[in-house]
Length: 123
Figure 1: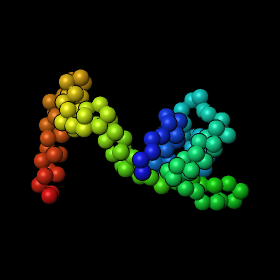
Figure 2: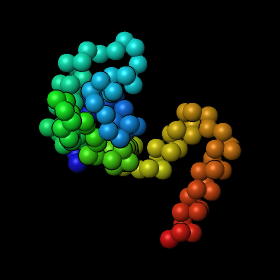
Figure 3: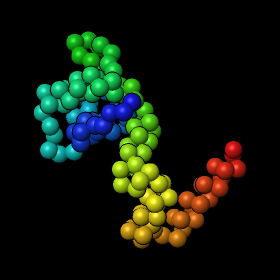
């Protein structure tokens, strides 16, 4: 998987990742106001199918859609693209940037370090 999603496609994927499976109507119910038209959501879902992000099962006269790509896989790819594009491939530079620009709380930093140390211990 090396495809990027548009903002609208990603919004629908977020809903599908949350619901795990849904009809177009159920997806629309989860979207914020103003709600897009049924045909708009249906078209975007079909595009996601052609990109192999979404699959479907027939149910009556309609379809139930489900994500093929895991949220964690897409998140990892997107984050790697940001690291490569804006931080010259350096995760350390990215973290440093966010710590400086976002006034990260000391408790948050300690929790991050603990998580890193726990991961090292597992290996």
